[in-house]
Length: 65
Image (cartoon, rainbow, N blue to C red; front, top):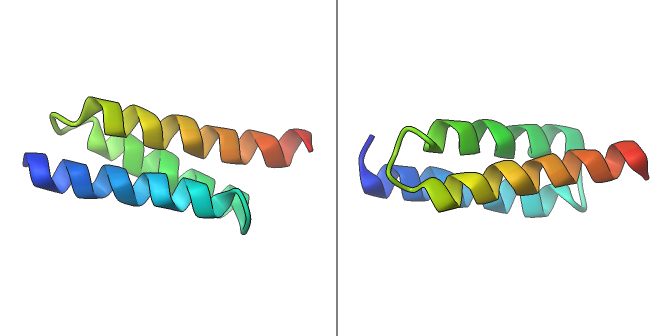
């Protein structure tokens, strides 16, 4: 996967996670985690970790709150 594709997928995952804090956290948090995991195939590891962590937080806030 190219660097640009990984960057786009990572940022889409981060945006999905942020929107997931306010609307449909299970769906959008899950999408963010999946996009983050797919982004690990690119050189953009920091963006991938950001998407995975924010997606997991969005899901966990809904579970525990």
